[in-house]
Image (cartoon, rainbow, N blue to C red; front, side, top):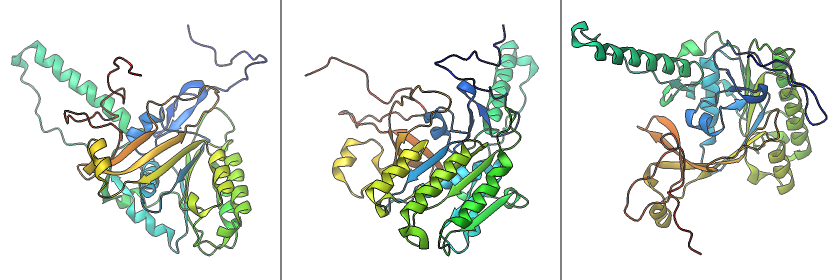
Length: 355
């Protein structure tokens, strides 16, 4: 029996309009009427339970010694352009459009060079062939939502030409009025008027509180801008990701920015030549940095998201594809640990507790 579209209201619940099954690429339905868009990193999509919820604000705390927050921005922006989603990008540079040339290209799946099986080889081989076609169809459905991106190959021009891309320079702005106007105009195109979603917008703001900007000493204005941006996102079919260096802000302003985030992430550099850390972690030489998850967005629910781990290593598989793995302590016997994508748990087998 089909579930009704309208929930009965009570003093302990509220009516939630159920989002219809998304028919546009790059959108996935979630629980409680939530819709997700991909982060651009499949491991991060799985960790967050689907990706970034529509209408949410993502804040990323930068590390001056680890520029890996740029990878989060690049994959986020590339995923939107591949899915033909409008993009607004703002950065403290003279030519922000030049950053588009550094966006990664989606990895193309290897061409299936195998030929069709001989019908005379038996029924079992025919069934195996059909099963492989089923797996390929499942993979294609995943590619419609998220991709693996080759960090060494720039995004092809076909994904940039003719796409709705708005680039804003924050370098010469004495205040945030220009950025505010651009965000307001951009988000007005994705107003959430009904449960049917026609299009999705993405906003990427790099190094929001950079000292290169003239407004960097106006912390109250920056807090007001983020507060306004979040209020506009709550009624829009869009997601914004903002990176900022917390070390350049006062502790109180940094805490307020973190509090306003729906999803809060941070990047941490890995020390070079740390012998003690190398002994503790498996695959230390392949790790480029650490990703910490401090908060996960909760839309239309008060149930917290319980993660198996909050700290993940960032590495490039085959020196091309960005991957996140649970931090595993190196066993005594030197065997390798397990990655997030291949293991359902990040901890070792439970044994007798030793107090």
